[in-house]
Length: 288
Image 1 (cartoon, rainbow, N blue to C red):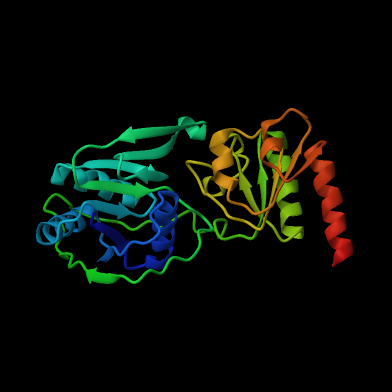
Image 2: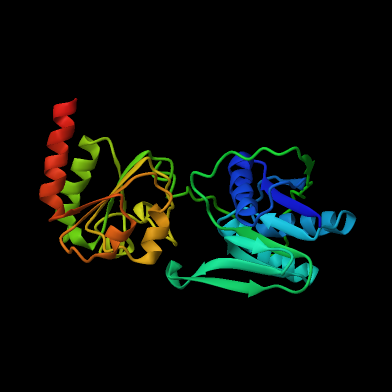
């Protein structure tokens, strides 16, 4: 079984760590894959053409792509061109049984899919905080044509809204519907700054416009691996939990003692979030 890793030239190390985490979860510890290095491009067509041409010269059974929409799009479209099969955000695989697993229904279920035709084109699930993975590997730069497709008239680069540092933050205050209002959110963000924490939010808080989309935590947002995550006023829906599950220590604050968030927390506090945050802020001041 030949495995090829499709890696961006920029961010190669992080992509390799994610793929290494996927292979470890799949029970593949000793593997010597090839690394296919892709330069950045304004659109996917030149990259797809280059991968298709390289595959014709050096076919592989399994093509693994990093997480994110770029990896998912490349995996899906290349599988179609190669008449193979694709799966996005794959969490693990049993290559002997030809099975791939991934989270479904907002993280409430795990779906197991049987793939048939080779090659498999899999984009892996995000793995924040994944251990460094540096196997002995041969890297092959994939030449990508600079010429744009005929149908592409103009291309404008837009800054990534998520480049806020939340994904790399060591201390995160994650807030949900329990905040109650945009005014309360301003108080909460002030507390977070005073405690040296980054602020993240659940989908409910974001959709109420209490904070911006770049703060969204969860399956469709940012996934963190913080040293400490303080989840305040969050119910604990599976889609949100997937965004904080990799944190090393989770503290939950909720006025409902039956809230699902407590099942995922190392420490639980049953109380309203504002007075708890105010007291924690006082404690931090005293320590300083």
